[in-house]
Every structure is written in structure tokens, then in C-alpha cells.
Image (cartoon, rainbow, N blue to C red; front, top):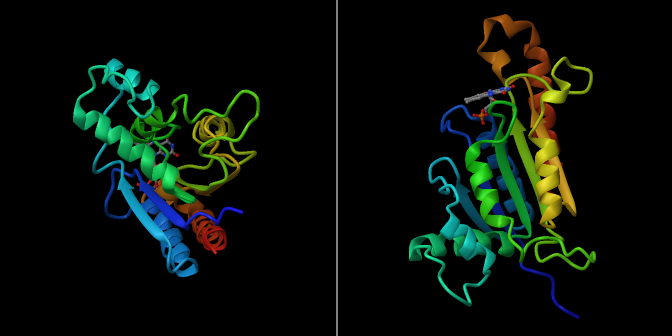
Length: 218
Ligand SMILES: Cc1cc2nc3c(=O)[nH]c(=O)nc-3n(C[C@H](O)[C@H](O)[C@H](O)COP(=O)(O)O)c2cc1C
């Protein structure tokens, strides 16, 4: 019988704001609660806004296709290969991942996309025969914040290109076994006068996000 993996949290933020960021505040809340529940667990942190992962190049993609770099270096620089290895290693080591993803233009920040582009490799794709995925079995919590609301029945219900996209891409690499989304909506109501009437709904959404994250981290 194999012993269970050491509990390890990978905490990722992507807001371009360092002050007043709702996603940073919420992922921090999750991380604090997770650490209380796992006092001897490991905790890795990556700020995709402060240190953006560069866009893919052909050389980097070729190196990623050759997982472990057993063969050629494909023209990717040692620094690029080291970054691929670091990004891959921290995801593989994590038992829980919390990702803060603000909504930018109805979608995820491009910094999150650049991070994903390095993770979707043949080594990580769920095997077509349904066999176990290398990244399978992890708990993944995505925390989004949006200025508006995309809840069922709202005028922009179909404009949420965060959750459907992330569900698809995480499923393709085995990160959807235990995947949850927590949304803080209407965050712009606090600062946009025309949205003042929506402030009670925004506060309710934020309170619900804190409550859900506390439960998910326990
Ligand atoms: C570049 C940019 C694009 C945005 N696009 C949208 C959008 O499409 N829909 C929306 O509801 N809010 C949008 N917003 C508002 C943010 O989603 C909102 O302020 C959210 O709270 C940002 O996350 P943060 O608080 O963690 O920084 C946008 C904000 C920025 C800076």
C-alpha cells in the first residue's frame, strides 16, 4: 500500500492589481484556512501577474513535447527549459491548487493562458483509453472575480468564457477530478455609481465566496 502524498498547496494569483484585488484576497483566505487544516503541509506560491510566464515559442513547445528533455534541447534556452520544469514540478507536487482568475474581457487573464499553455503537454493529457492521468486526483479551486454578473437568468449569462473554458482544459489534463469554482460577482458595484443599487447583491456574492472557500479548504 502506498502512503498518501504529502499535502501540498499550490497558490496562484493573476490579478494585475496588488491592492484591492478581490481574487487575491479570496485566494489568501483559502490559503490561510488550508494551512490551518494542514499545519504540516507544503505551500508554494506563484504570482502570474508579477512574473508572467512568457508566451510560447515554437522552440519551447517542441521542448514541452519532449517531456523530461531526454532528447534534444530543441533550441529552447536553458532558462526556458528551467521554467518549464519549475511550472510542471510545482503542479505535479501539489495535492491542492487554488487559482485566482479575475475576469478580463469575459475570459481568463492572458497570464493564466500562458501558464496553461505550458501544462497541456502529452505527458499530462488524460490517456484516450481512460487510464489514470498523471495530474489526476488533485483538488482544484478556481476563484474568479467579475465586475458584472453572469449568473443564470442575467442578461450576460452566456458571456462567461472563464468557467466553461477552464472546465474543458482542466478536464483534458486530469485536473477536473475534484474541481470547484467560486465566483465573486458585481465587484464593480462598489466603485461604479450607476451600479450602486447592486451593492447588496455584490456583498452577498462576496460573503458566499468566503463561506464556500472556508468550507473547501477545511
Ligand atoms: C482589463 C480588464 C477587463 C475587464 N473585463 C471585465 C469583463 O469582461 N467583465 C466583467 O464583469 N468585469 C471585467 N473587469 C472587471 C474585473 O473583472 C473586476 O474588477 C474584478 O474584481 C477583477 O479582479 P481583482 O479584483 O482580483 O483584480 C475587467 C477589468 C479589467 C482590468
